[in-house]
Every structure is written in C-alpha cells, then in structure tokens.
View 1 (cartoon, one colour):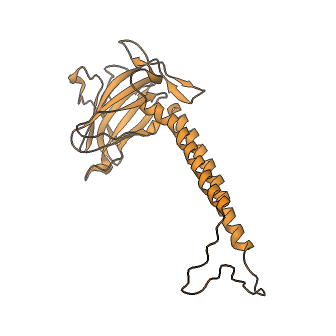
View 2 (cartoon, one colour):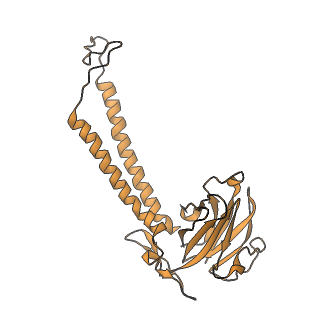
View 3 (tube, helix red, strand yellow):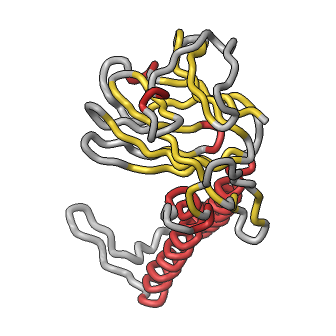
Length: 254
C-alpha cells in the first residue's frame, strides 16, 4: 500500500548505509590482514613486544580513536532522526496532525500521498475499536453503538451494513475461521485498542504497522487505507499457547 512508502524509503536508506559501513569496515579489515603480513623469508620483528604471559605493549592513535568514536555517533544520530518520520505518521496525535480531526457523519477522509514527506495525509479520520483477548481479535466499527461489537456473518458472503466499516468472519488457511474487518480504501481509521487479559500487538501486514495493546490501558494506531486488497492482522507479542494462530482477516474495498 502507498502508506508503506515512508517505511520502504527508510529501509532503502538503512540498507545503503549498512552496505557503506560494511564495505569500509571489512575492506579495512582485509587490507590490514594482508598488508601487514610478513613474508616467509622475513623475520618477524615483533613490534608489539609480544611475549607469552605478558600483556602486549599498548599502541594507540588518538586521532583514529576519536574519529572511530565520533563518526559512528554522528551516523547513529542521523539515522535516529530520519526514523522519526514514519513513527510520526503512525503515532501522531489524534488532535489535528496529518489526519485532521474526527470525520463528521457523511464526511470522507479523502486520503492522498504527500510527495514531500511520503506520508498519507487525510482530511479527517474515523474511529474504530480493536479489543484483544486470548486468542482472538474483536472489532467495533461504531464505538458509540455496542450493537456493532461481535457481529458475525457468513464467510465473505455478507452485504456491508456500511461501506466505511463492517465485521464478519473468514476462513484463513492454516488458521481456521477468524474474525474479518472490512474497511474502505481512501479512508483513514484511528484504532482505539484495549486488551482484556495480557499484552497483545496487532500487526496490520498491508501497511506494515503494529502497536502493543496492554491490559488496563488504551493505545491508538493510525490505519490509513489507500488501496483495495486482502491482508491479515496477526499478533506479534507472545500472549500464550495459541499466540501463533491469533489472527484476523482484513478486507479493504473500493
């Protein structure tokens, strides 16, 4: 989905810096390994005065040690700084921010990609609830109306009660019958999440975001839906015996 643009750009930059640092480090290592090696004919001069049972003489280069400390520190600070962009897009405040305020009845989020920041920007957002418990997800499309919670309809054979959000069930290979959350592309949702027992963490695969859901604590997560498709919601925080099969289907329609 387009919402993952920020993450992929960040991933590409991390890979680039990993390659550069790897080439420098291992290049230096191999260079020194072969360059500072005496030939068979040469007599080893033992510049470090290495003797069995004696700590070798300390050879230091202050300029090299300072550079080897300062330069990686600058790189770490830079990588930390650029990592804030996707974090802000996922966990930005619900009061304003890039997703505006809560949508009024009949209002659409009208998502669009901000080319300058790579983030999905919305005019407004819709609130949904996600409740976790061992070992199932429960969705509520309308937090102000408890009748939505736990609605079960036949596997993908349902008519949407509303095109913005609906819940049902779906058969997922390897997981059996699981809850299904249906959302609309072009809309942004603020998931208000709670746990009824232990710590869980919904991972919305299609946009690559996840957040811990703690017992007795409410957490939130932005879900900007930009393209139609099918995906899954998995639990990525170990929560007990059936953790590996705690899943749900996600259906995003036009």
